Amino acid sequence: MVKNAFYAQSGGVTSVINASGCGVIETAKQHPDKIGKVYAGRNGIIGALTEDLIDVYQESDEAIAGLRYTPSGAFGSCRFKLKSLEKNKREYERLIEVFKAHNIGYFFYNGGGDSADTCYKVSQLSEAMGYPIQAIHVPKTVDNDLPITDCCPGFGSVAKYIAVSTREASYDVRSMALTSTKVFVLEVMGRHAGWIAAAGGLAADEDNDIPVVILFPEVEFNQEKFLAIVKAKVEQYGYCSVVVSEGCHYPDGRFLAEQGTKDAFGHAQLGGAAPVVANMVKEAFGYKFHWAVADYLQRAARHLASKTDVEQAYALGKAAVEFAVEGHNSIMPTIVRKSSVPYVWEIGEAKLADVANVEKFMPKDFITEDGFGITQACRDYLSGLIQGEDYPPYKNGMPAYVTLKNVAVDKKLEKFDL
Image (cartoon, rainbow, N blue to C red; front, side, top):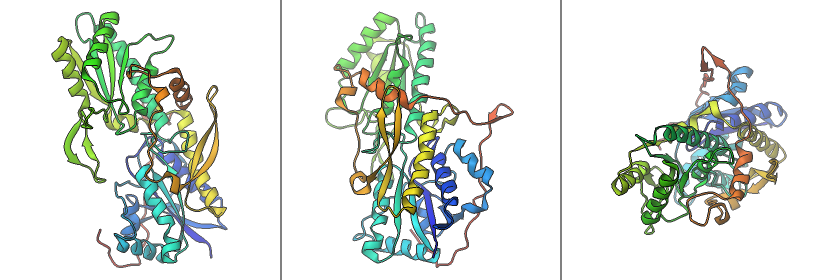
């Protein structure tokens, strides 16, 4: 009997996560002998637990194709991590109940590290609870911190946005530095890994001699050294730009931006590193400053997406389905780098057991010896990921994004409370 597929988006969304969804859905339609329908979970895995499913095949082919250039999560996302089978058997029994009721045999979960863990746990259902389910994780995270894969869809576009924004803001500050702002601070995402912050270093190159100081999570924050390099840059150039990762922390582990609260996954709630750093500079030297937090803007900016990133996002969604119909289970399709200059890549695969709960940090040889910049090796790595433009269609001067109908599938089971 032909089985249906379940697809869901998880965690913080990106400008290209829908391109992966497009890849999954369009490819599934090419295999009617293996996959009946694709049901999307409304708000991620929560949609499976509450039997809140969306019939993706109620959408037009044009609408599904439009996902390729539409940012955010078209079906809704969530931050919800399944506990272990031993700790919460009730949730797993509910998943099986919903999968059985809707003849679901394929599970495609599009997300980051915590989503890989959830997908890995679901992949064990057939073994532990006697229900056959093929679980494939579709990688996504702006943090670029999933292991094994060369990069993660979503990161290339954020890197492009931060690199461009840092360069443009630096031009602005340079023009005002004599009588006004001398230091601009941009706060970017990245709890433990400094990939996004590193992208700010691309603002400077052989044609753009821009003073950029980067604060990485991988480098313990030293206030004395930081202030010294900012002062040196301002004295040399007249101004300076600082890119600070939200995960920048003191030697004792305290985040510069820690608010004392926790998110849904138990992680420290961050936000506010930029004003902390800017005020340090102000108090030390009296320099006039401006600061900004890229926040959602960096991950929502589909208008400035990297063409390479879009192509990889779609290719990984496509590969996930192809692996599934070939009988694979408990894996994640990956990007394999064949060459950096020029950037050449292909699709590979990794076992979810090797991916779940593993973070990839910036290699030491990507960070300069002083801890405040990026090396040529890092430039070579990042450069390929930001290549190409893939503009969405525009109407009346604004991007014409797609909003799906998201028609609900009739429920067959009793209500389930989370």
